[in-house]
Amino acid sequence: AQSVTQLGSHVSVSEGALVLLRCNYSSSVPPYLFWYVQYPNQGLQLLLKYTSAATLVKGINGFEAEFKKSETSFHLTKPSAHMSDAAEYFCAGGFGNEKLTFGTGTRLTIIP
Amino acid sequence: ETGVTQTPRHLVMGMTNKKSLKCEQHLGHNAMYWYKQSAKKPLELMFVYNFKEQTENNSVPSRFSPECPNSSHLFLHLHTLQPEDSALYLCASGFRVGSGNTIYFGEGSWLTVV
Image (spheres, each protein chain N blue to C red):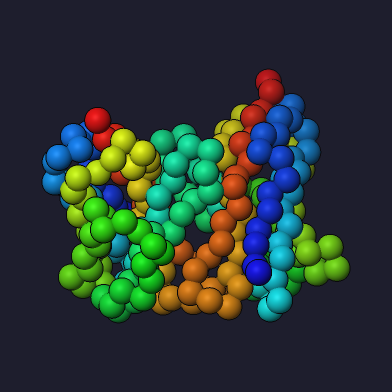
């Protein structure tokens, strides 16, 4: 069965430090993979999307993610955290059917 | 461009009330979705509409009744809800249904059932 797993429901990093949010998937077909961000009291906003055109995907706000088939991973990174990055981040996968499968989310806290 | 707009943003209703949530998209999309987001639970897909036709009902109780009069508008009619139905209800839209298609979310409607 297809699934998306986000490791770590809460991640804290210092301002200026590297952000690494982990996402692993399970799929019998080539996946489409997404990262969304949800700021407090808002809906989900697309950060970036993997469609097989390139394994390293650049998104908005300085985020990027790398698709690694051998590790079935699609981790999200940002070189230097900013206070405004504090939010909840969702990894999602499209696995050949109509719907996206979402992970359970990772809440990112930035320490001043 | 306002994207996907949901109204009301906040709704408090009693268990015997009937109310509706409204979603409108200005992106020219043909697929529309309702999701439920509860605390400490994964995002739950409720309904999918493709070109106004319902293509998925994810075992949602009948006290939730969706309506899609055209590709730009989606409603969620609510009646005799339970307190556990309190959640953030998110509407989303996409060009068409399919796993590779990006979906765009509205800001959500916070529902509290008392």
